Every structure is written in structure tokens, then in C-alpha cells.
Length: 315
Image 1 (cartoon, rainbow, N blue to C red):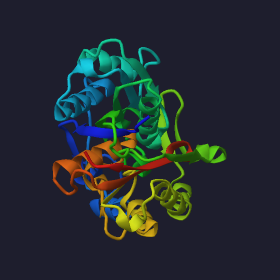
Image 2 (cartoon, rainbow, N blue to C red):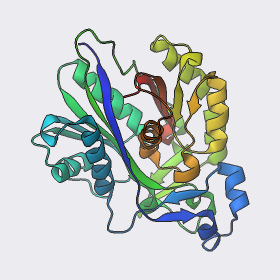
Image 3 (cartoon, rainbow, N blue to C red):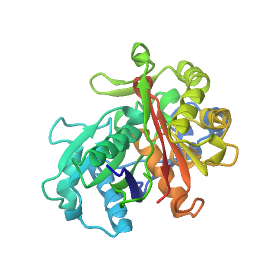
């Protein structure tokens, strides 16, 4: 039980970019209105022939390549998503089939926007317990499939994409690279963020989510740092769920991570739900904004008013 670490990351976004100007022609809105309220400029939108498992598979393949591993090295696949259209086979099994992973445990995790950090903790626990040796942990969502494109309060927010991490056991004597998770939820407020109905549609009570995120979550995020034995000022980066720049900026400030790079990928990618944290984290690493071994707070929140966070070491 030496603990686990993130060996490598990968991300993928569809080629089609939808700008604020494009949305002006679809609903009553403006570039200034969108930027001032949510801080989003562009988002990537998948086509009808690009299912969730394809987005996830591309990101996972990049993470595997970055780790120098093959499909045969993986024995656990976890996909965090809330936009799977079919019940079975699940997204994890479909990704495993796409990549040629032989006989893995394959599970989907649906905690909406906090899905990736829940799945990462689950993989960490499985490796620590000896139930897995190497895991692919993927956050992937195709929010465009569940969006009402005539509703300007929600269609300006969303984007599609995927991010992935390879999780493996730490070498003997090496400190864990994934810290203890702090997770929970507010079940009685589950109605604040919804994907429901036939056809399924995304809806939220924006003001309720904003108040909860900016008033309740800073203390919880600080506790996640405490569980890892670090003060927020020691963090090299903070990667929060990329919901809204007006939530990200005050939340990062209230955590007290005064020396940290704060991921703001929401500006270019929109809210990609479970994909947002690994997508933003992978981009920070790719751009060289953080270095191997740096402590990074990952903190997911949103759907079900669930949250999960842990401090990890940058691969």
C-alpha cells in the first residue's frame, strides 16, 4: 500500500469551435453579455458522428502514449461522464474496446462535474488496495447532446471534450502522488443542477450554484489541502471545475493559494462537465506552466451539489 501517482495526462477536443459571435446568430445574446457573466469566449462542439467514447478514447490514447505504456498495461478503466446515451455497454467498456485493453475492470462514474475527481480517488483506492496495478481515469462529456440550443441561459455555457490520466502504484519508498480525497454532497439541493427528462436536457439554478460555490466550497477545498499536509500557499497550481470564470476566480482567491497558477481553461473550452479538470490540468502540463512533482489541487464541484478534491503531484 505505497499509494499511487499520476504517470501521465492527455486531452482531446473536437475540431469544431463555436464562438460567442456564432451564438449571437442562434439566441438573443452578445459577446459582451457572455464574457461579463461567465468569462467564456469559445467552446468546442462534437459532431453527431463523435460519441462520448470516441472523445474519451482519443484522450486516453494520448495519456497512454505520454506514459510510454500500451493497452496491455491497463487493468482498470474508469470513465466519469453524465452524457452517455446508452445504458450498456458503458463508456468504460467502449473505450477499452477502442484501445484494445484486454479484460480490464470497466466502470462509469456519474457524479457530473465532480466526476473526474471522484473517479481519480476510486482509482487511487483500487491501486492502494491491490485491486488494480494501472488505471486509465477519464473525464469525458458531450454536453452539446443534452443542451437546449434555444435557451440562452445554458447554451452559452457548454462545450465538449475529454481528459485522461494514467494512475499507477508509486515505486517503493516514494511518497504518494495522489493525496487523500475529501468528498461529499448536498443531496437535498440536487435539483440545482439537472440533466433529466426525455430527451435529456441540462438545466441549473445559476444563482443557487454560484452562492454555494463561492461561500461553502472554499473551506472544503482548504480541508482537502490539509489532508495532504500542505498549506494552500504551497500549491503550484489550482485546477477547479471549469464552470464559470466568476466562480473560479473568487473561489481560488478564498482558498488562499496565493502562489498558484489558476487554470482558466473555461474561457476557451466552456463548461465540459467531468472533462473540465483533466482537460485543464493536461493543458497546464503541456504548456509547461507547472513542473514534474509540483503540488496541484484538483477540486470538482457541481452536479448533485457534489464535490471531491485532492492534492496531486504533477506528472
